[in-house]
Length: 362
Image (cartoon, rainbow, N blue to C red; front, side, top):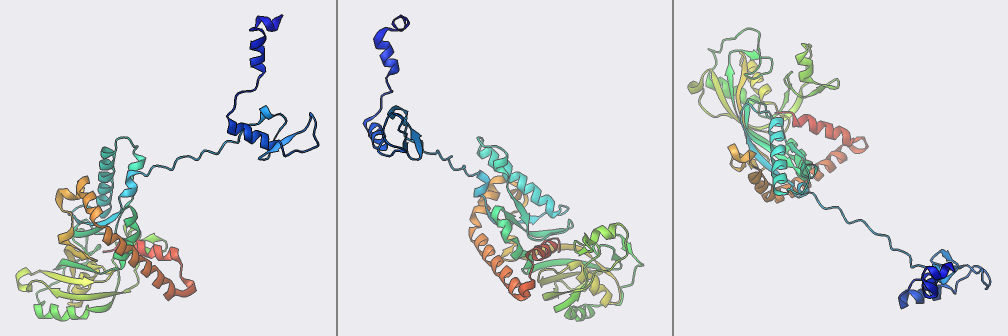
């Protein structure tokens, strides 16, 4: 017989027998038979945990859903803070940000060879643009630190600036093209300069330069200026806390050196231009150095090679935990006060757009 050729009677019976189960599983199966969908008999369908089964051997304990393991945090998620660097001359602020971002990502990738490049990407931004000709304090937000940069845009800043009499330029600085004719400055004395400086202390009205990042009709002002469009930017209110000559004019003529402490949104280029006009001559900005922004001063900045060294940057970031917490708290207060001042008309998108405009200002 066929069944004898396939292993005999014992082999056939073993194939027909249900698989062995533990006592706990058999107990659960027996208890499940107490719930039926009909009356007894061979065709009785039993239910356990909403799963019908007819025979005890068909029952299996339900499988528990397997939760995927939580994602492993990326190395970049641990790098959050606010630092300051001494921006070198001829570098734009965005070039510094890009260099720092690439430096941190390369360092994280080197320290964590098992992760990919995507896990080492990090967000970096700055808290207020400095022109290529300018140097000094540039606040850099890294990771969650970028959310606190708005406090530095609205905060106070200190500068050392050098202006020069003789003519004006289209950009109001040394990189621009000469506009109009040269004007004599022989009549200018130190007493006259100090008298004019008094007019520019406190709350003043100031027109931004045509080559600036202020928006006009949906575009940046410098875009209109590069196309040769003739336009004027409306004056706006800024606050200059202090303004004085740092050296006697007789020692620096025809240049004059200024030290000023001002609020956010102040254009130093426009300030020097307006001083020249008030003295019945012309002037442009020759040099600019930001000496302080918020709680950061030149002494706190990363200089030279340290600002582009991954280890030095990470050490500075980890030390800036208190600065980050303070900046986030101040940013929350600023947003709340702006909303209360505007009432129901406050628009968070307009507020963010205003902050982005101020980020591109001197």
